Image 1: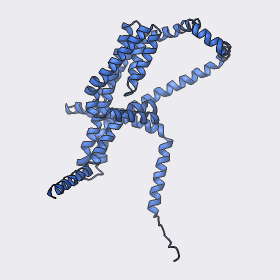
Image 2: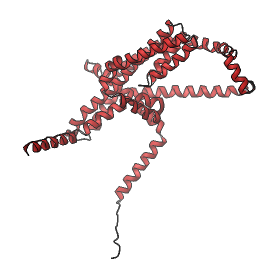
Image 3: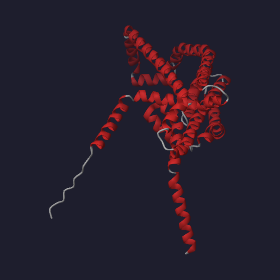
Image 4: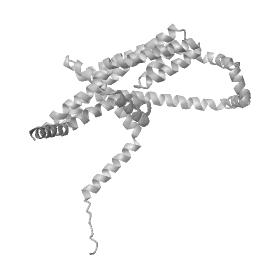
Amino acid sequence: MPPQRVEIVIGVRTLLTLLGAGLLVVLAILSLSTLVSIFLAAVIALGLDPVVTAMVRRGWRRSRAALAVFAGLFVAVFALAVIAADPLWREIGDFARALPGYWYDLQHTATFKDAVNTAGAGDTIRNALKDAVAALPTAAATLLGAASAIFGSLLSLVTLTFLALFFLMERPAITDALFALATPQTEARWRPVLEESIHAISSSLIGNVAISVIAGTVAGLSAWALGMPFPIVLAVLAGLLDLIPQVGATLAAAVLVVVGLTVSVPVAVAVLVIQLVYQQVENYVIYPIVYRRAVKLSAYTTIVAVLIAASLLGVVGAILAVPLAAVIKIVLREASAPRRARMAALRVAAERERIAA
């Protein structure tokens, strides 16, 4: 028998759909940084949405409530910067001035001398210093580039702030516009899911900041009590690192122990013990109270989400991993609810048949 011919007909509408999807993917890749900024602004706005909604229930207009919340955040950040800027800047300056002394002490240790003599690193270091001196005339261009980068970062921060503010003001209107395209049954099913997702995002972000403040306070007070250098710098660094769920506290502890070694081994051991005890308290007391009860994610899921998001978006992805994972869990739970109900009914019927037989 001659081979049968199979004819596949692809309609014009299908081709246009595939072409449109391809163009959207290309545009998304080309504008990835912009999309990340929009997504980050949306997450910040959704994190603040429950606070604004509570103020609206008390009679505030939504625009005024959003402006008041952002103004309060700005005042809090500005006050914190004013309080911490002077001692932080002084400690950074002291640290920079102390670096030559640290280098001098390191040069005169027996271990360093042996390593330099063995590897012949002395000439290499001297040549590197000569090259650095020769390159000083070009440092102005580098400084201008750094200033330009800082200005660009500040501009991006301002843009992000206004994006989040406008999104927060228009959130109910955006939600209503999206659900206007759905049937009443779909809206009745998925609007509670949206509200629960917003609550999860808000709880995770606010909880994360609260835990970071506690971690920074513990690190700063312990560094000050043990006589370690630059306790304010260490407190700020520990708080920022602790913003990264699960792994940030470990990184902060490693930094504190290394700085403790510059004082003495007993101080480093004391810092290690304090950090180990605090991490247990954070994981099993603080974390469940302010974070895990609201988000309801297991430690394994949290770590996996942080690793995947960090590999895709860096530190920002690691910070946003937990709220995003919580939203995905809520959506999947609701999407799979009908099938889980059917499977449960089939199991009950099978069990009844087994008993009847």
